Amino acid sequence: MSVITRIIPCLDVAAGRVVKGVNFENLRDMGDPVALAEEYFRQGADELTFLDVTATVDDRATTYEVVQRTAENVFIPLTVGGGVRTAEDVARLLGVGADKVGVNSAAIARPELVDDIADRFGAQVLVLSLDVKRSSATASGFVVTTHGGRTETALDALVWAREAIERGAGELLVNSIDADGTRDGFDLELTALMREISSVPVIASGGAGSAADFAPAVKAGADAVLAASVFHSGQLTVGDVKATLAAKGIEVRQ
Image 1: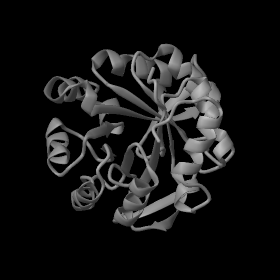
Image 2: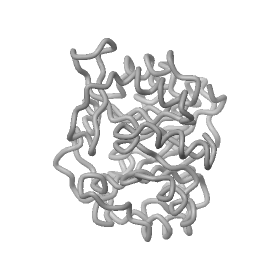
Image 3: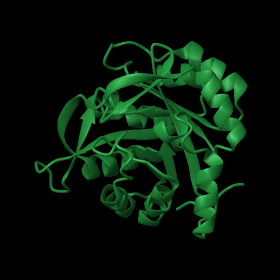
Image 4: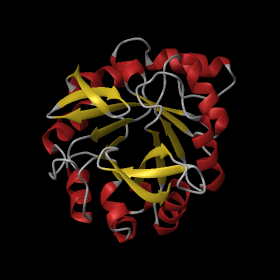
């Protein structure tokens, strides 16, 4: 949908530190979220996504203080997710500097939350975060999970995405749990299926291992591509990815 493809580093945060694992497990410390956010801002990231990956599991709110420090030091759009359960949580996050808010588990438990947020703040604020696994139990072959990928639902990922868009979700963050942290490339089938049913932008997430992995995700239908470990490790910079995409004829913001 977008003319310009966005590159979005993702900061998965637990206990105030950036962490990263494989398939959402075996999390390891990757550094300070504010320092990493500042570095990605310098590198030319188009947006940042900040996910408190244990907030829902621990049944607590997201770490507002870290969000505020991040927002005070970077000047690009910041999406925050993790532990968002009510429209009041969204109001508080916007108040400390978030530009968009991601919802997942709470919206699955109470789909009306999507309506509440969209009606109060507008679709442009609301990102539906989808943690998706392959499954033979659904028609599409993909199922939605909750609680940081720990709990598998019976919801077909495409059916839920379509419903959430109808309720007011303004963007889909589609994270493949199967590909997450593997560095084997994005799940192109999942990206293409989401593109087919979505009337809003699609962000592909999970599996980036090299600069060459990003263009196929865009060609499969992603409006933006999100990655974590390849940036945190220093293997790639945002500039590396943008240069590779530009060489493939994909428009990026320089």
